[in-house]
Image (cartoon, rainbow, N blue to C red; front, top):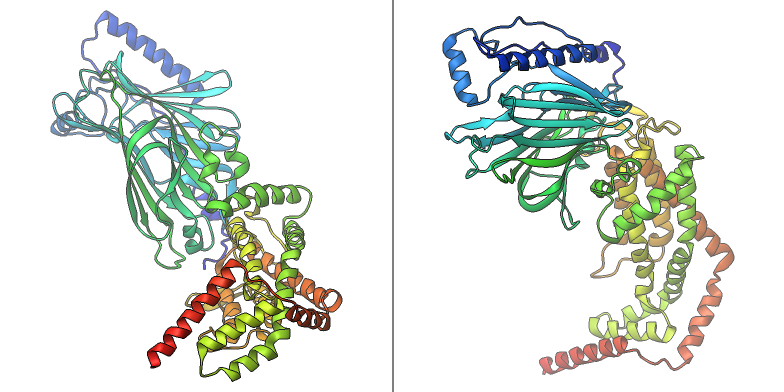
Length: 618
């Protein structure tokens, strides 16, 4: 695992200085109309200079400065980009920012080249970036009427930064002429992660080849933010929502590729942070890909998964027009719930079916309420106590079933000895004994099944709860990640290079719990699993598995098993009396017991099998 870095110089190294270049004229002999257009353009440049820092000024030239000196190279470059001309050929960036997020949009490609979370840092105190240093790209690909293919990441867009009330509006235009252009328009609102994004063309109906598809390509490599890259990668996933509200996902463990229809939004989730592209005009189809970049725990690994989406766009009347939104922000229910129009909260991995429902609508709001006035670790302890108390009737039923089975154990053993050479007869007599005594061997399993939704919901809650991110408790620095009490000089397979204390405590508590419930009452029988082996194996597996898991989850299991042990001891000492249970079973044996349909069917099947066995011996 990667140790926490304290070198402040590594943070300073990320500081970048950006500016914007003045525009340059394109024609040798401008007409009066062009002179007026150029004059208006220059006035806009001067207005922009009051908002943005100018890093470099270029003189007016007859040809755009493409940083290509040879005239042949200039000609080839222009031939590649087709009909689009330029008044600016610079990869300078324009800054959009509010209280929450900072975006940098490049003239080259008109795309977001940096997305920084202003209020969050990584495990080693570096600001959280979702887009940085070329890890992402966004482009349109289309054919021209003369059968050339254009890629917008190769085009230079003219920036125009204005205000719409309190909103910042950035228009990026790749122009053929003042009235013919392709525009990417960004509008950022104060204190909001969602950015309006309009994609449209004007006057390009004769330039764009409408018979060929126009595709939108969006790629991103997820930047690592957590201590354990494998653990982070487990909750890093491409998720998408269909127009009908159905949520689908690509594989979280391996490379995956799908072709989907009617896509409303695409979410490139990076555990606790998400990059989402949502559209008000659902994409009819989309080719989606996810590539896993993490094979093992590696301190030098910088990325988790590589995502890509290729989506054909509708061209109506030879023009493009899409109203979309970008979301760069935390995968936090409190934030994503604000965007009900797109139901972005559905991108959070709560789990499937009833498990996810319990996680989303019970545990998440309940914990949010507790943590609003309690320290985060204490809130986990209080929630655990309340959950176990709520489940105590189920625990009582389970222990009562175990007590009955313990009372019947001598008689079951006697039947086993009496019919040791006839397994079918032994099973029949055992079922008769259960029926007469009013005991069901399945009654101990039912309480365990009832607790399964709670178990799984909490298993998904702790690793994905944004509320726990970077919240400390006792020796744990981050309840959403593993705690460390000792760093090993080597790595143990499946365990790691550190020792976490909460999983050790949880494993010890589980061992004592299983000793109480399994070791005494479930002897090994032919054909049945060795329960004593499971009693030792389960805590050991948990010790290894949870060493790299969220310490909040290990804390929950430790406290939960301590409370369960206390409840069971209370039931045993003060509520249940084994002598009374034995007397009740003996009374039940004397009463005539009517078979239910299931018991009758089972008895008839056993008798039939016994008869067939006897006939076969003859």
